[in-house]
Length: 538
Image 1 (cartoon, rainbow, N blue to C red):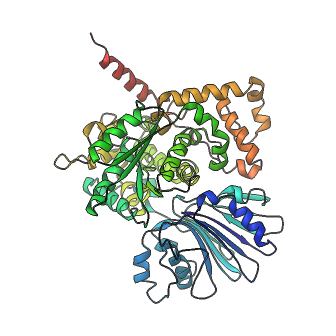
Image 2 (image 1 turned 180 degrees about the horizontal axis):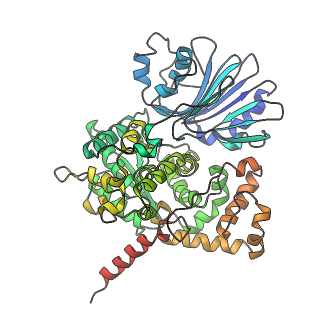
């Protein structure tokens, strides 16, 4: 995991490029390097050393005149070296180097051969290719300056004030000067009518296990983000088993406002059950409010849900990085794939359920993946997401939608994922965790976090300011004082209209309350009422 910056075009001096690249030095605190090509193109790299700690410095030169920079991990790099690239001579043991050799071997047509998460730029004379992984696990932006130079960067802050226009690089695409943007990732599941695969619980279990196994590839310590919810608990259980095969113990990390936060209690139970080396972090609402300005600068978004959930993740990531762990597994994607958000219960039909699941997966890069990457990389920590493995996605997304709908199973969300790992003869998790109802991460750290956040934002925004929000911010106008407060901070750091246009709002469908918190859903309210009733002694 790293930060990359590429400038295609003449006239940008090396010192200026270094300064722009250093704006994201948090992404790569281990090394920094830059290469200026004969025609003036510049490649810069901020490195977080994960694979090949000693010789994997970038930019990396290919067999002749091509150079590349890459952010991410290529999980099948060894397989590629031993098969289609067996005739190539490699300069390093880095997984990244296969990219430049794939370009030399296949030209532009090679992104589908990569199994991994990536954003990269390869430059060869006046030819170049830039690409982003299928789901957008790794961030990438592109822009054009006044002199016609093209910029590519891992974070917006390295190009926003340099470009007259810029945008988010679309996931699953590559770009070349000859072809323009080309969509290389065309999975069958993007057609909602192809959700016709029979349910195979064992296949779900084995493919998710293999997706997790490949993401344990590392030359540095690995941990897991453990909220105590289903997704992170399953990831932890699988990783714990796989590491035990190697005689290693998993480090798990959780966060809450205090030791009685819903997620903290559940995570502790999972950690005890799995026997992980568990680390529990606490933060206060006051501390969360105090870092909002810095957090929004890192996140490069004003999306309410992302900011709410990123605050605890930001504190947790710092603690993990301080503990010497550089890579963590995280559970993003499961709720989108299996319709786990509580509002999915209200889907009017199986087709509508499937369409929404597809759209949520396609837009993950605008919300949860952005949060997962930038909250962790603010502290030089790499997050890996097994649920978004290409093979697992192809299987899980094409399962008949009726099998995923909660109403098929008395309202229990993600039933088939839970059932796939419900193995009484060799249990992965305690039953009460395996079947625990969905919580938003931002709620699970302690319900008072969101309440205090909303109250604070309301105290900082006058009624007149909110009433004038449409005129002040005509694009994606904020509708609440909380949204207005975040938007104002974002605008201070990124005042360009192009910056505002990189952000997408997410409003849950099929529920009256438009707040994205899981607590706003009627299903959560009813469940809370049942818990209260059951606790009353008659």
